[in-house]
Image (cartoon, rainbow, N blue to C red):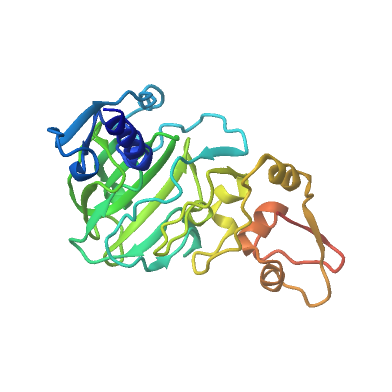
Length: 303
């Protein structure tokens, strides 16, 4: 019996963390040859007791309003924690990003576009609860999932749902099929990531390659990463991650840079040299795209 108990402890240590955190029991098949020739058990089933998942439907929960946090004051930085070091890919094929979060065609593109073929399966990136599964104007058929860390992911331009509002979903669970419904130029997944109503640049949180990597167990999101006009949808920005209180303090101590306008400077040239968009320069300095720049004029370059 002592040998059996020892083996069970070893097996639990080896596989315990890989089990479903909300499962009620854990089944273990016993390798009888290593326990006892007289053993009669082939499998044991042990009860599991885990901390219940937080109730993420108790506040600002609606099945009909896309952004239920509208008008709610937001304090930066946003602190987002992840239990997993990877996410489940929302598509089964290789991820090809066709358009990123940023300024596009004179307006804010507040998500990331991933190429697919109509009918391709879509999957939930993390555990959570479906807040919406409805047709929503430009987004077309869309599923919005709120995850247990407060993050919400939106899967837009779908052709079919496999879930409905208030369904609990697991990481990697099939949620429907991709398509080109709504305002879509060709079939693709428009993936939106938000936290308490603030759209976040997806590339700040996740690596969109075959690693499916989450950039940190704890990430601090500053205001610039929630403003699409700071970025171009045609290129991947420089990612300066804030993954600790120490790095946060360093960032907050960093003052806004000032650029002194030189002879021959244009907004286009200044934006290229400082890796910011023209829209960001205009917003930060309360000027227009056709404003005349003066030599010696000081422009704020947001960090």
